[in-house]
Image 1 (cartoon, rainbow, N blue to C red):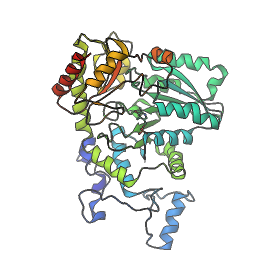
Image 2: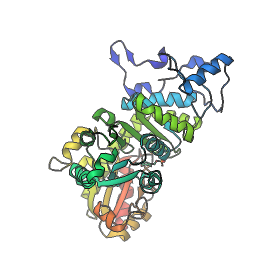
Image 3: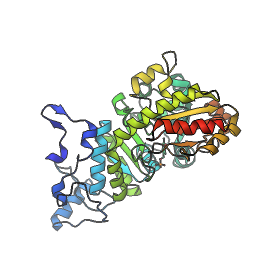
Image 4: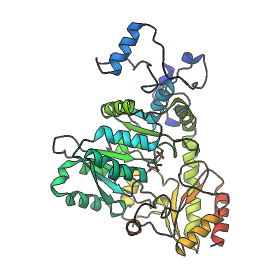
Length: 424
Ligand SMILES: *Cc1c(COP(=O)(O)O)cnc(C)c1O
């Protein structure tokens, strides 16, 4: 059937060519070229027998037939928009299965609750997203799960050191959770090294799983599953959604690992709604165009900043050189430098604030990955809950500004930054 067209002759079609149609059959929707938004809570069964069959599969009362899909029952379990979106998302990361959520935090929380058990330890890179940090240190401990961090800036040595510091508890590590590049410093964690370190088992013989939050570079510029990671999570609010108008999340992994995640999603009710799914499908059609444009623009902006006398330092993956300790990791794991830049303005917090207050085209806001350029101050905004001493040890300074470069003309973004730097 054309809805799953993946190749023409022996030519495999690229992800960007599939984003307008993959997983959708117009014949099921009056020929509509785009999937309608199925704003419905429940679905009628053709017969009582069909309802019975659907529930047998939903509740795992019998094995699915090889070609059988989960029938449509109720929108907390599934919905056409969610299903089509999830099929499209698997294409980019080369994943077997996808689950979509109403936020990135819903995706991360549901995944961790599904994969962890009391007594488990999560080894994680530092810094991680604030919500993830709160989950690891304030919510999961109530369920007997604890966490141990390693600084992304210390590289693989830091990861091994943290494991060693756990002593006997190292065999309780059930998950290595990695956010790379680190926000906002762009330090890289080597996924292959994390996978190698995870090739052990927990006390009770389960495999240690590597989970990567791929929000910053993925799925265009980094594909962790191809490097052996078990699970990829996204805040789809960022690049996948890409227009700063929707909150959403996604998880990608094997069918086997996905089964408990989807069960937890059904019971916790963290699934993505049909309207959110439809917005994300619209976004996916231009994902490559947007991320490519943003990536190219970021290089012009980063080069401008690096040359500016009032800028002390620029943290940008495109400026890594062979001498840099993370060069090999970058070459192996990233396909492009992405569009996130952090830079340090000479003069500390006061200077950074003057710059942020003077921006005109670039908006002062947290979040990232949207079509418009955004700037913020990590030390007092996104990373404000980290103690100042810890911020410094991770390389987050008072003079640091984080920039998410959008799709505007790069010379206009640079003109805005130039006049704002003049005001410093
Ligand atoms: C924004 C973000 C999240 C949380 O996603 P929401 O969609 O806001 O719930 C998680 N991880 C990273 C890296 C993020 O940038």
